[in-house]
Length: 352
Ligand code: IPM
Ligand code: MG
Image (cartoon, rainbow, N blue to C red; front, side):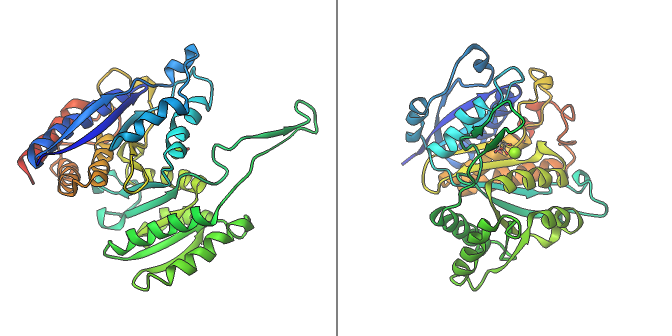
C-alpha cells in the first residue's frame, strides 16, 4: 500500500518560493528512495499581496486543516502594513491550528560555521521547544489617551495551566529520547512573577520523568551561557517571546539564520514547517539564497508525518554536504540555491 501525504506549499515572499522549490526537489528524491508519495497543492499567499489590500482570513486558512503538513517559505514584504501579514498568516496558522510547539533545533552542521572560538560540532546540539500559542505574542492592544503625554498602551501576557503543561510535557518527552536527557526551562520568573507557573509545572511534570535531569535559568543568563558554554544545553523549553529571541541567538552561534529550520507542531495534526530566515528581498530571484533552512524544515516535516527514515536521510545528506565541502556556507551567494539542493537530493538518492 503506498503511503501518500497531502502537502500544502506556501512559497510566500522574496526568496521563500526559491528555497521552497529547492526543498521540494529534495522531497522528490526522498519519495523515490523511501517509496512514499506526496500530493502537493500550492497556496498563493504572500505579504506582497497585502500591498494591494489582500487579506488572509481564518476562513481561508480553515481548508488547510485537512492536509498532512504545510511547507512555508517566508512571509514579509517591506511595503506591506507592518505586522498584518504576520498576524493573519503566521499567527493565523499557529493559533488557528493550535500549533503549540515551535520546535527549533540549533545544530552546528560544520565547525567552519561556528563563530565561537574553539567550538566544534560536538559542542552545539540544542533543541529549543518554544511555546507557540500563548504569552503576550500577537495579542490585542489597548490604548488610553492616545496622542497625549499621558498615552499608555498595554496587552495581556497570558499563560494557562493547560498551555504550560502540554509544552513542558512535550519537552520532557523529547529530552527522554536524546542521549543526554537534560531539560532546561528558560524564563524570567524573578521579574515576571506570573511565570512562576512554568516553575511549578516543571517540578510537577518533572516527577513523571525521573530519567530526565531538569533545571531552570533566567533568559538573560541563558543568552550569556549559550555564547560562553553552549555545550551546557540539551533541550530548552521556553515561552513564546523568549523563544523567539533565543532562537535567533541560537542561529547565530551555528552560522546564521540561513541554517535554521523550525516546525510549528501539534502532534498528530496538520503542522507547518519553515526555515527560520525571512524573505530577504535583496536576494530575491537571483538563485543565491541558501536552501539549507528550507531543507532542514523538510526533514522536520518528514519526521512529523512518520517518514522517519527519510527525515534522517535528509538530515544526514545536509551534514554530508558540509563535511564533504560541497556546501561552502549558508550566506547568500555561497552557492547556487538549486545546485546545493541537487547535491543534497543526490546524496539522499544514493544514501550516505
Ligand atoms: C519567528 C518570526 C516570527 C515570530 C515573526 C515573523 C512574527 O520572528 O518565527 O521567529 O516572531 O514568531
Ligand atoms: Mg523570530
